[in-house]
Image 1 (cartoon, rainbow, N blue to C red):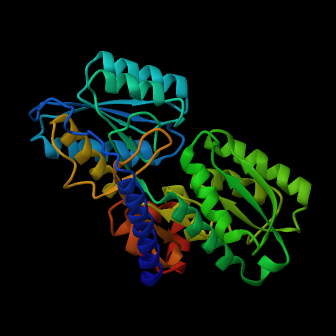
Image 2: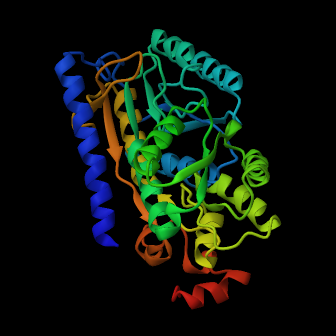
Image 3: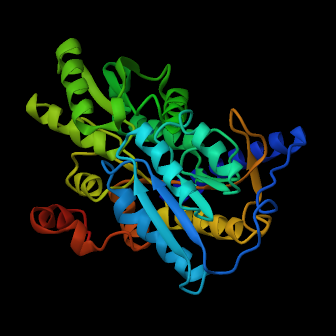
Length: 367
């Protein structure tokens, strides 16, 4: 399992270095850091997260960023928080409010990478640098941190093929991609297709509106009706929330032992992996991503260079050479729960194995 994790990490690093090369050759440079007036530790960091359907944002990202900002500013820095609840227009209003309130820097995880561009420009025009977090927003972004999203899709696709084995030759799978407004969803899809195409027949494929589990559930019901429950051998799900909706539809149809992928290592997803209802999730080390975002934001607010933080550069559709940190990912299955989410302190064994999950935990030796 460790060899697999190393291979995934190496792939992520290779992609990020390739991105660095393409940006460096363009000759474009970001002025992040140099444009901000030098400040002390008494700074305001605006944090805008995209939605609360996915458990990670409220449980992990927000408190992790808040903690790191405090740590970096001798407890003087303040995080001003807003959640857009999957509403791009609301998020634009939230950016405007933070610009009006004169925060010193913004960390933005965009609901819609294109729709946010105008608000990013407003912030920039007001002298407020912007860190794109998790999703590469358009507009004059100063810094970016995320995971290698194409590698995420490849990791999911490879795991699904491994779970299917010989069944991949005879049956069909359903692909449940993320929202079409999320640039990451397109990259997950690209990575998954690069692995799955030609290896297994894709019977139905959906872009799931707003990543909502109920929409994934409805789509899955439609796929079962269209294809027939005896024809479906597996489901590619882009994240854990949708996997929950998909598995509910599979159970309602009386379908068992259908491998389903996921992403985000949500507690409910990890528990489904323990019971065998979900085959895998992609574990993304959120502490590392969140800490990098906080480091970037504090440095930018204080007028410091990002050279010691961001060794790579990436290009967005609107901005070249954005200082970036790309964090590796790991395929999470029953075999490595201890070595990932438990070791990193995301969950305790007691949380995962609470109540009805204890028997399943005992069965796989998770104690």
